[in-house]
Image: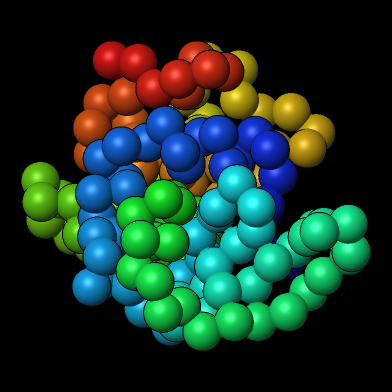
Length: 144
């Protein structure tokens, strides 16, 4: 199940470098975008929650491209792993080596992100932000 928690939404919203990777026109089918009033899947808009007082879960075609501009991307775990595998300074980006780098980062980290309800999306996002942009999640923002 994709992480749509408040914590992950905030981490993604404030990860400006990650947001720049999924610019308008480079969206893929299955991309998930968070909007204040719902979620947009690549090519489809899906309200989740309430709309005009009714519980909804309806898909809509995105016709107004300003919807995407007013939203932000929530990368899936596989997309974050793909970003990790494309680190320009890494010479060996085979999946096992990416996983070993992730493990070494997690095992040596002294950050406070880990808790019983930390998701793999949150961990992989933190890993990509640290390795690619040298930023760490403070609990409120990404800092160098």
